[in-house]
Length: 321
Image (cartoon, rainbow, N blue to C red; front, side):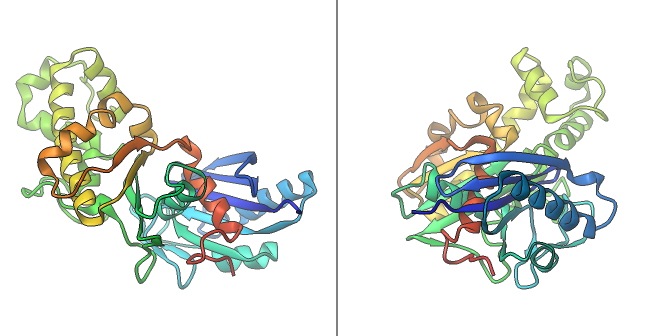
């Protein structure tokens, strides 16, 4: 049987990655560029096309199609990124310009929808009908299969779990403009902003902290300080973990998954704090039987592998066209 190849694209807030892969789920090569260094919306499709053509030329293979997993929101009817809080432009056309530049069928999916496809085809979701994937990275998002069907929604933005309200006091504004959203508190971009808020509410605790320069701290700085026993960092992460409990318990109660996998740089770099204690912490919030909870075995490539599966036509609800 002839081996099949596809182009997979993972568009994130920090990096965009383009890969050539095969139907065994192998990524032959991955090339990345900084998303926020783009000067115009059209430059996104231009760079993806340039890299794709170079990969195909160098490997000398026939490509079936292009699958894109992108941070949303998306307009899947138009094949565009629209109004994303984490992107440099309000509107980024993808499907039409890439189809024209490459002469290949192209499919666009929310990055977490792509990720859960990757889990079902090549990861922890193989053999299961009810699967949820959640990423905690620059933002927070999710993708889900229920009874074997991928949930998409009218615009392809179903399972935007990062916008579950976890703070009834609505103290922080999310990048989307909503208030009290999970992403505003527990994501890679949200944790530093929440630290700033808590410093104003607890100035004495903050003044004794290793986290002295709040304007410059990152989520990594908070986790590093926590591991060193910093009391202010402990307060931040106690709250972040509680908000995570609210978000994850809502997901389990909504979707009743057999498997819940978690990815994203913040989660994968802090599995001992964010993932391993989760099943025990969630018990008091759940009405449904707890699922198997684990970090994604596909690591940082979960979106790319899902995009590859989509490029190869392995998910009938998101076929390249």
